Amino acid sequence: MKNFLARLAAKKTLRVVGLMSGTSADGVSVAIVDIGPTGVKVLAHDTYPYPLAVRRQVFSLFSPDTGHVDGICRTNFVLAELFAGAVVRLAAKSGIRLRSIDLIGSHGQTIHHMPQVGASAGPAGRRRVRSTLQIGEPSVIAERTGITTVADFRPRDVAAGGQGAPLVPYADYVLFRDRGKNRAIQNIGGIANVTYLPAGCEVEDVLAFDTGPGNMVIDRVVQRITGGRRAYDAGGRMAARGEVDRRLLGELMGHKYLRRRPPKSTGREEFGTQFADLAFRRARGRGVSGADILATVTAFTARSIAEAYRRFLPGPVDEVVLCGGGARNETLVRMLRSELRAAKVFVMDELGISADAKEAVSFAILAAETVRGRPGNVPSATGARRRVVLGKIIPGGRS
Image 1 (cartoon, helix red, strand yellow):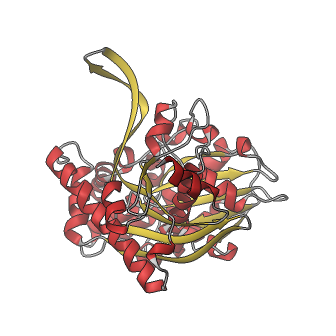
Image 2 (image 1 turned 135 degrees about the horizontal axis):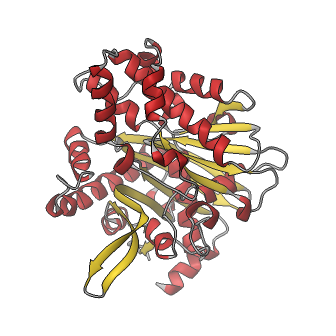
């Protein structure tokens, strides 16, 4: 194993698959990339939706009331089979031989994230701990594909005193730092997160954190107003038919997370179904229409991002580069441009990497750093005491 990893780490160019399933839990994003001396080249990418029954099972795991241990155990392996199948499907579709792939980097599926220090009682007494849990068993991925798999990236950063999130800032630094421009790389997945790259920065200068909700609250409101017939607002067309309710927007912007200083991260525990349903019921109780509620929660995502920039970024922003599913929501992008008039706001595709592929590409980069024995976290983003090598390595059939 040691000699195999040494040979892998010594390769000038690694062909790596990145796998990502985010807080929206709508499917697995796959990217196949070559990482070498000249940079990162994306060879292929696609997203494979979860079967409806699987998605429902994943969502049941998010709540302590329904996330039972037998379901967690079973879904850990079910998702891994889907992840492995996605790798095989994309390789076949793009004409890339599986044997040409050196490595897989799998984020897995976060089912619970508790980044704030809390007390835990145990045999050794009360301890102050942070915790995070991702599933999608990497042993299954390595066994089905025959490819060495790196997974479970977040716990090592947590062990080093960090929040285990966000982890993509290192990849943002590798891909998008610029000598002359201050860039904000804004991902809008279920949760929204920003990486701030000052002009000419070194990795120590990077600042990143979760700004708050991304698509999560929007998606839930869509489900409520359509009776479950739609899962998301395609292109933001439904929100475009409504008007922002200023009272509701003010109430949403009062959430305590938005005032918390970085480093910070969040998830469904703060902006999930319970939060969205409570806001929806209160607004409907005042007679606010479904379309207006949807427009308002879309504005909430845009304003919470902009407010995070104003409160916490140490300098101006020249360019805002959008990625994640929210980058395809034209109403949300229009609102964000209105909030951030001084900056150029555009979708990442203009820089040569699809906004839909970027997070999967990020975990391919982190996997390559892991097998080369190099740290992949950014302490200024996560709050960790030091930079550490991330992830656990499962040898493939060829090792």
